Structures are given as C-alpha cells and as structure tokens.
Length: 376
Image (cartoon, rainbow, N blue to C red; front, top):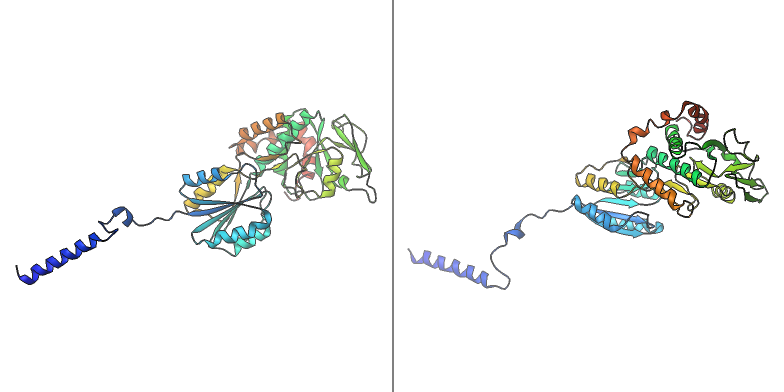
C-alpha cells in the first residue's frame, strides 16, 4: 500500500475518533432518526361550565382516536379571545365550542373568517343556514328529545296530580308537526290517562296597566287573575275549573318572553319547553346540549379527515336538561330511564303517534297542529 493511501486512512480514523470523543457525541440513535408524525390537534372551549362536561372525558375520547386536544373553560364574553388564541396555533385544525343554547352569530362569523380550521359548535338548537362551509353544528335529535320531553310532561302531571297538560298554541312555534306529535306520544306513554288542552299564547299577555297577582288551587290548575287575559274555557275531558285557569303543566314549542314567563310562573305553572328558551332558569325541562358520545364522533371524524359542514343530531343521552328544583327526583329517574330506552330507537319512535288510540289522535291532532310550525 502506498504511503499516501496509508496516511489517508490514518487521517480518516483519527477524525472519526476525534468526533466520537466529543462530549455528547456517539453512535447515531436510529429511534431519533424516524420521521416526526404530527397528531391532529384540536381545541375544545367550554362556555360557562356546561352540565355533563369535563376535561378528563374529552381528553380520554381524543386519546382513543389519536387526537391531541387542549380544553379551555371561559365565559361568554371571553369566547372571542379564546377562539383567537385557538386558531393562532398553526397545528390546530379543529375548534369545538360547547355551550348552552344556539351558537351566536359572532362565532359563525369568526368561523367564516378562518376557513382553514374546522369548527364544531355544540348547542341545544341548530342555527338554520349558518352559511359557513367549515362549521358543523352538534345538537340533540329533535324527534327523540321531543318524545322524552313529552314523557317528562306526562310524569310531572302524575307527580303533581294534574288532570291535563296544556300546549301553547298560536304565536310562532318553531317545531314541525311530526316533532310535536312525538311529544304527545311521549306524554301518553308516561301517563295514558292525562288530557291535552290547547292554551292560546295570547292568554299570556299581561293586561295593559294591570299588574295583578295570581293564585293557585288544588285541582291541578293555577288560576290567573289580573295579570293575564283569560284563556277560553277548557274543553271537556280536560282540566276542570273556572274560566281563566291554566293547566298545572304547560308545554311550549316556541321561545317565550320574560313577561310571558312571568305570567306562567306567577300562576304556578310548571313549564316544559321543546325548544331553547332565551330566559334561563324558569323551565322544568329543555333540550340538552349533546354529551361526550357526540364529542367522540366529532373527534373520530376529524382524525379520519371527514369533517364537513353539517348538522350532527345526537340521539344519545343526555337529551334533556332538567331543573332539579322543579322536577322531583322520582321524575328525574323516570326521565333518565326514558332517555336510555329511546337511544337508537328513532325509527320506532316515528310510529309512536300512529300507535295512539284513533279517538285520541282525532281529539289531539288539532291541538298539535296549532302548536306546530306553519307549513310543517
């Protein structure tokens, strides 16, 4: 071997030895040379501590589908800054907002301005035509929730020994006729002996210049005097009592104003709402914000790249938000059982109205029509 080639080998060996002798230097670790895999990243924003929700459940659901998640708790007026912080991170591809009620326009506008990020807005009621292609709305399945709320009204009538359930008619109902009929069927399932009566929403208008007061009676009704115009006489087979009385249990299919709520509350009426109400804390039961099962679907879709503009209707509990001060624990347990029994039974529920006795269908159908959205 020539002297030059021998020197070259010695130099190379010396260089390698020198490199190996440096602090922190050593044979390459093949584990660190593998390509880095970035997990899909999401941010979940809890607004005003929604019931049935906690960070641990969300983190567990995210882990199961391989999503990196961060949860944030905030108040309504801090949502804009929470959303801005979320989209500022370039790794975040999904932002979820969990809130009671309908998503405000400000959130929809924010989503429209950040089209590279998908948004899933959890609430009790969907916004029609949100106009944002990157937004999914996650809401309770309306027919299933309506059936469960009807059952709540029937169970309350049994608990309070009310002879009939009132249904607000006229005004601007928001639910289609099939959903209202579903609620009638739920009430009948819970209390087959209860009567149904229509209560014109105009009867909840305070009389001009009259403050008045209300008094209750023991017949399952609440008499209204002074502060509301009297509803028409109760039909035969319904609630007995003097003209001007309201049923002890009333179901609404439309949002009510504070003054209308006041009339009902002062009359001692227990109100069940099939739709979201702008006045909080005065309703025995309303549709609930979907729970962790719906979140699992959202995160799974995101991990699989299936996010798109849509309305995700959740038919799994919770379906109803209950006011524990107005709903006895025994009735709460009955409602919980109903929620579990109707899970996955949406097709069967579609036939619930047709399963009622023909005579009751004929008697109750006009009330259901007047309590439903026009054109439905």
